[in-house]
Image 1 (cartoon, rainbow, N blue to C red):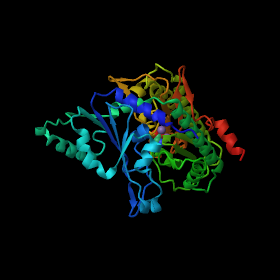
Image 2: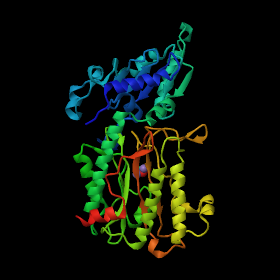
Image 3: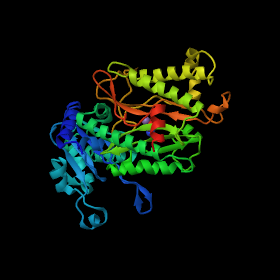
Length: 438
Ligand code: GLY
Ligand code: MN
Ligand code: MN
């Protein structure tokens, strides 16, 4: 299994520090454990920025970088604790943080309030995820207050707090070779999971049976968690964009929309496929599916370096609007229906988003007020959809309650883009063929 090497983490830290004001500190707290119910917690998920810079996967930690020592990293973390480790498993501890996780210095997290004022003294700026956590911001203010209280002894407090996320998220937008290798692996696992769900589908099962089929493949390949809440929406549930109940029975003649992707070493994959519960598309389903696929393929085809972020979205809007007019779901001239936004009754979201450590990954979509151009190494999803609500007026009955989305993950290359999630079928023939061959 590919892992991010310690030297890549060190290089990321150096690259970040180079962009910051001299004599400044970077402070990034870890994520916290969240109670699910009384004594049980949600599975711990490290903060993505913390993970990107350190790979360190423990709660109750804080990462500290110093622009004047770009090769070093200080970790505040939990100390080893025999009793706690019997219950909850091993901790890196102060020694492990240095030995195994690239820290040059480590302190117990309990010493944070004691040590931070001294570390902040006589610094120019502090870079942190400003405003991300009000309690942490308040804690930082209390440290700064203590530094300021020493002003008569000649100690200067930092005069500016800056959001570290601006430069950091720009770095995260461009994936390294090692990151792409992990993302390809995550995409391959998710593709297999979608195939398993297609193979398992039949009328009478419930949506959660397909969720189970996906989850089994994720786990069998070492992905412990989905990158986001799995969506299995059959029939009109497919028109609910973030449907996660997954409790309805699968009905003969309906489509089922599955939006699911595994997380691997923190990296997300994000695939949507829509297929008939019984393996055969009806005429109305076929018509809308073919249109959605045409839009998705045209959008993927438009992606290459230099092309604007918004181009694939515009392409999907054009193809879908023209197609809906031809099918009689929209009436008027496509140009006008695009201008007045009438297509949004059927296609109300954007064609994609950045993908990486977060499923809706970080990175600006606009630079200087303009949609940014694609560059090699960016990873994004392409996911047009067509949703005909059961209550939608003035559409032929056969189309009502059909929801379709087709989503793939792509990486921008030097000459175009490469689809990471191509292993899972998406043409009508390939889906029907796969489901007939069970
Ligand atoms: N699964 C979330 C999304 O597709 O954006
Ligand atoms: Mn997506
Ligand atoms: Mn998705």
